[in-house]
Image (cartoon, rainbow, N blue to C red; front, side):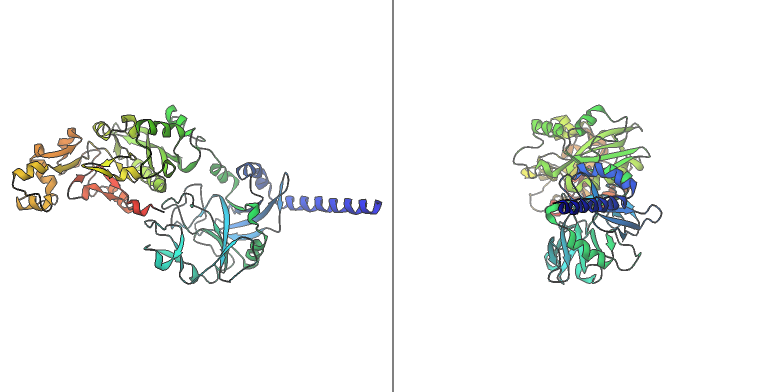
Length: 507
């Protein structure tokens, strides 16, 4: 009996020594961050902790960690790793094609490779010659693995062409739930092309280490990858109301406090701030009251995002505003709002449509910039507008009105109702680039102008503050993001309106 107790005690001491040695192999600053990580990933017992080198941005050390009852320890020796050629992207600042590896905490759910099978318990996909990973931000297949013949994407990663890198790999579940346009795609842990050779944004390691990790990972342990220095990771773990500017209005602060999670942010810098969250419960309650969203609308509230942002007012001072947009466009809007602020594009006001009881006419009359509103297309009852999908925004409606020629007025002038109004106006001698605009400028009483107080802005020959003109930088920025502009329509003309095709959002 004594011998058995001695053996058992020796085993315990050996185990304690092993754990202590493994724990000792974790740098102190990483150990200090593990308690906060533990609460954020309560269900996970396996971590790949990727710690970037402060002096060499494209290099890192990967620590494979195993959770025991009340502490973390090394599962095996740390592994040298390579990051994106441009280093790390701070939380929520990763963008498509920037060559940066995203900071954050992400699930590891699937392995891939060229062999028919590999030694792993992870869900495994054998790559095929026609497998591609879409990086075209305008495609509905963005950040998805699809067959080449099944997508209309203009650009993608041909998975079978990277014979070295993708011989074995793990999909990092980054920008997947939801997929946000332009936030970055195809983030993997894969085999390095050579020692010290950076990636385009992935994490790469040597082949032997990759094989060892694949055999070690266990989906029942809910493995995750942690990428970034502790200070950067703290932002990823922060809630919607953390680090808000001191001057943010209390009503907006209260709304953000009822959001379940943050999905993007531009922290305060050079006076600009913007944050995107899931729709806060306070905002959702008001949307239901005003019926800006209601059962039967084409998208659920879970597909929408709430944005709070700083903008430049027409008074030349910064103000705070709010928007609700499609969650897949949150990143585009964060970037566009930042551009508007930096270029000091003036906005009169930016309130949710609910401040006007979801009445678009009232919102336009107040010269309010707004986005989501579940409503019909103007003049087409029963057909949902792009606003109903969170895919459109109207900017400064007074300075950028909606214009169309009255059908009755044109019939009095001889139009038989067949063909396009524009073609008939050309026959009447209105041959400018925009016949509707020219006609309405000369005959405002024969046109529908929204808001009605915007008659003086029908004339677009000279630019005034807050106007959206064809060559305006902000118009070009929206178009680069894939939005269409109503100012380029022939009939009606909707100078205030930008929209993103819902077909490119549908998943």
